[in-house]
Image 1 (tube, rainbow over the protein chains, first blue to last red):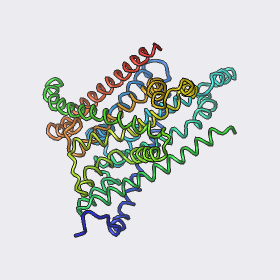
Image 2 (cartoon, rainbow over the protein chains, first blue to last red; image 1 turned 60 degrees about the vertical axis):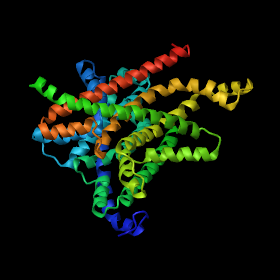
Image 3 (cartoon, helix red, strand yellow; image 1 turned 120 degrees about the horizontal axis):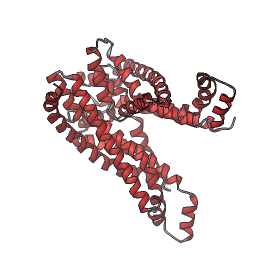
Image 4 (cartoon, chains in turn red, cyan; image 1 turned 135 degrees about the vertical axis):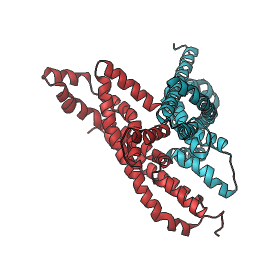
Length: 221
Length: 219
């Protein structure tokens, strides 16, 4: 029986491979979830800008998604999707929930970028007889997106830190794995602390990367 | 059908909502204290105070809220420190949101024009007076909109406490789902309840913002 009060490095090494495998799953969920959020967020933002009831609906749906807990949304997807006949894995469900939850936040970032494009760019594009789709694809978005990449990066970090919630719907990500290891050996200290340290290191490194990006963007080119 | 399930589901959900609101309210107090303490700490002239505030902010912003909750609830007892689920939830979630709030406080203080502090120095005000009577009152209105968002984030994060055995709204939803199998109704109701509370939180912060603006003669 190892001493309960001391930190056991040998035990850390022993559980490291299992945690590393789980970290890979967490990372996968975060990257796929972010990609979905980027796509849905753009769709939501464009819908919000179309005139008519669609814009109103998009606004309310996004407000509701943004202000309710991700955990409840996770449960809702997890229990409701199968009853509608959709059979997908827990990990995929988690990716869907993460992507949908972060879409409204991402849409806000897009909005800031789009509003940062000068009105004269729109006027010029219209004067050149561009179609709306062409204006978006060739004039507005190429100018709106690069400045907001750091803000999107921050949301990716936030999303990554929410992946432990997938433990609640049986995904074997980092936290769930740490909990199981802890339950098997009655030592929660090392696995939980390692998971915390992993998130801390990742997010510190990622926020440093985001700051570098910001600095590069701020420099006049 | 809908009405009968409403009368059946609502009492238990409202009981859960009570717990959720308690944690949110107490968490808001913790978060506000932490945000101002760390926000002022990080703007301090003392290097040690700055380092301490920075360490707190990075630690709580850098790790996941759920991991923090689990760590305090499952790992701390190993050091002989047993904390009940309720205070653990309030302190951890409050400190978590407070770390984000600290950056808001820092940013708002930094946004007060430098001339204000110079004018205060010219009038021979002490550093403390400058902070309390000149810089903070001018920084407060700018803090309100981000604080409103953080309050909603806190409300949302209280759903996590259901995973450390607290019987909040999300927990009751799980219980009801398992016992009644009315999954869609239960989660629909729960989402509406959270949305309503979040909306009211947002409105009250907006009201506070207007009060502040009026008291400073800016309305």
